[in-house]
Length: 201
Image 1 (cartoon, rainbow, N blue to C red):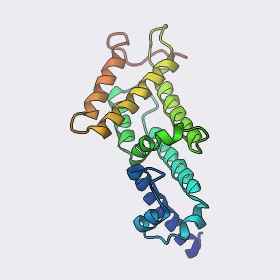
Image 2: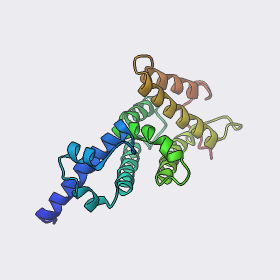
Image 3: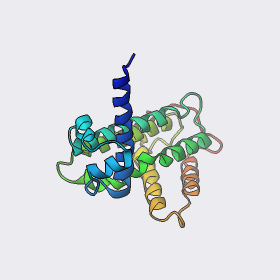
Image 4: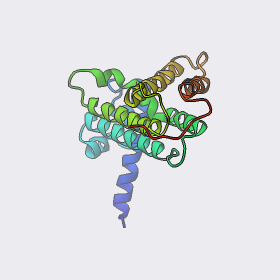
């Protein structure tokens, strides 16, 4: 059982992580300071390096927690039985609604920079999304000339693109309708009336 001091330390750490995630998503990593995080979290500025060592350490901790949230969200999606397009829509929609998803978009440019400390985290996020998508597609009777891996890349790319467009122009982009259109496109490559069946590797 955690002592009161350990519990307080854990609570402070979570407050800092929540504040940092919000600020990184709103302002970007470079524009966010320890003072900003302290003001948003209500935790003293000196406590931040005590918990995370440095600003880069804080960023990595935020992303590690975000990756865990993505995995938990995907794990909650239906796995057993035949694929259900409506449930997949709901799962993708819930994933895109996570606050951390906006964080991934905001920090993407920094992740692409040479030597970026967060590049590996982004690779891990995309790998997780593609693996989940592939595990679903492998249960569909896809045409033999359509590689599952390539289709997974296309679907994940489309989902990320839809989310980015919605963030930039929510008054013009209906994310729910766009995801429904993507579902229709995927369903259109299957034999009529067939959304499950043979496993394809």
